[in-house]
Length: 392
Image (tube, rainbow, N blue to C red; front, side):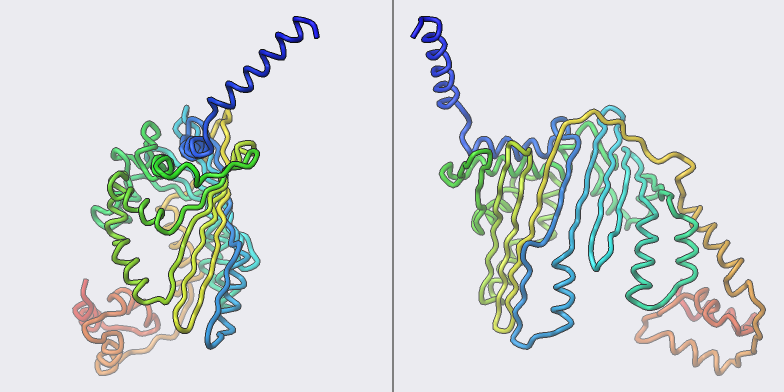
């Protein structure tokens, strides 16, 4: 063997030995991978797919309807792709839910102070409602047709008005709907928190086979992780866990059930740049046993993207919906037709009013009452009585 070849072999062998000896452990690789999954500077295009791998229910007294619903839910699949344009501070989320033999789209765009929601979701929901209820709603169909291909625009101010006072502030980051400068401060911090916790687990619980690394988070580790989140999580996560009262909820379940077990299997594929999570749960009491496994496949990539929110001509607002509702009422509502009216006696009025109240619970407002009895020709005195009867 010549000197040149010998030197080459020594160099290659030394490099291989060095890389093997100094390479990351299976645990370290998994930890880094989990952390990067939630880093939008590394993975600005993220794809998730959620399916049921297993959903089995055993009942002492089988219920055919319940079994039928479970069989349909078992085939459900939710997939979504989020694309983050950090240069222009825009995020898109394209989701699709396949369930009950149909596919429902959920397409959204987010800016720091606004969101845009596809009205095609509304149209699909109307179609689904009519299919399963057997009831056609002309007004809903009118709204669906008029808004097809459009995006509902909601500003941060409008969204705040839809929430109970104070509640909306809890989902903001630094006062913004989406803070692109500090995205790790929100719910996306879960990846970093899981990575940090995973780094504390025993190294020998991580197995490597080629490009794949596996680990099973046991029931005890998951409970410990929740405690870790209570101590180290963001304010939003800590508040959520506080409201959930996880420890009390878990204790109640363990007291009520004969068996309660859950775990999570993690499979990291470094070659495919994907992480697969299998969520396993078993619930069992004297009459029922439920065993389920939910599979989440998450992949990420770094791409040059240019995300643009829907053009103005494709947007509609809450005011536009109000106008469409008024247009429908004018064209097809009660006021658009001539009805034969009748005079309701005061005694009949009192009987009808009493029907809509029970134990100080009112089932409609004065305005809704008058609209419901559209063919009654109320006197001014009767209208005043109706307004006095129902609280504002």
